[in-house]
Amino acid sequence: MADDYTDCPSTVRGLQSIFQEQEMTETVHDTEGHGYLATFVGKKGRFVILRVHSRGLVTIDLQCYEEDNTAQIDNLLDALEKKLENLLQGSITRIKRLPALTRGGQVDRYWPTTDDRLIEYDIDRVVYDEDSAYQNIKILHSQQYGNILVLDGDVNLAESDLAYTHAIMGSGKENYAGKEVLILGGGDGGILAEVVKLKPKMITMTCGNILDNLKGDCYQILIEDCVPVLKKYVQEGRTFDYVINDLTAVPISTAPEEDSTWEFLRLILDLSIKVLHQNGKYFTQGNGVNQTEALSQYEAQLGRLSCPVDFTKEVVCVPSYLELWVFYTVWKK
Image (cartoon, rainbow, N blue to C red; front, side, top):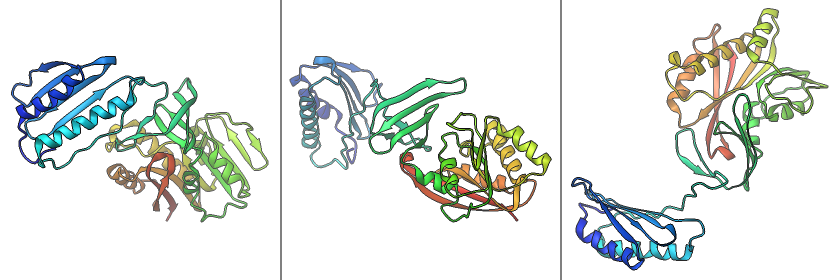
């Protein structure tokens, strides 16, 4: 990026010489007076898009095949960078070379954060990839995070993410011994595995996925939709010391009256509070800490339930998410 208007003709001529040395064929495109745009095609499928903007920005996009000579590519980029520095003679305010993106690879390494920042994971293989009746299920292996569960393109949980499980259980501050616990969702089994260690009286888990054993000494797994189960518990007057909701994150949409996901979330929230013991606690995830509007909207919903509640929230770093995540604790006033 240059300070002022870039001398487009001289910049173009200088960069053209580099591409000519590489025996690349140039095609100039009409920008209707808005700077300069050209494409260059060279050996082994190399393809370059050169754009000199009228306001001082120069962008160079180099595309090549994986089997191309990386040393030659680096030399070409070095030459272009050096030429730009010579042409603009100290007027460059910033120059940045981005790492290469791998397109069309057998393993997809790129996944967005909740606020649409692109993250490149160190994924080295696909462990599992199938479409169920409900969603696409992927398990990807990361060298840092272990196996990562990805549902419909959304990173759910990795083997490294015990911080998530502990946070949605109250971050080690709760005594589960002898207590009645209701888990909504949590189909990966992580919450169940951790709560069982704390000797509760009974854990009831509503889950649409079959785990290894549906019953144990202190737990049962119901392969059912949680809504009718919650409504049944409300009618029966059954209550729980802890309700842990691991069904879905707070929706990013901030128009709850128009979003069916918000309606579902409100329904689950209200039913969960109704089956919560007077001194019980409700735990759930929120969303990425940067989703401030969606989180504020969720907190507004907490003030519109059938009974008044208080809440606290905690921000936790979930390793494989590569962003800070918000968790809520809710209880009856």
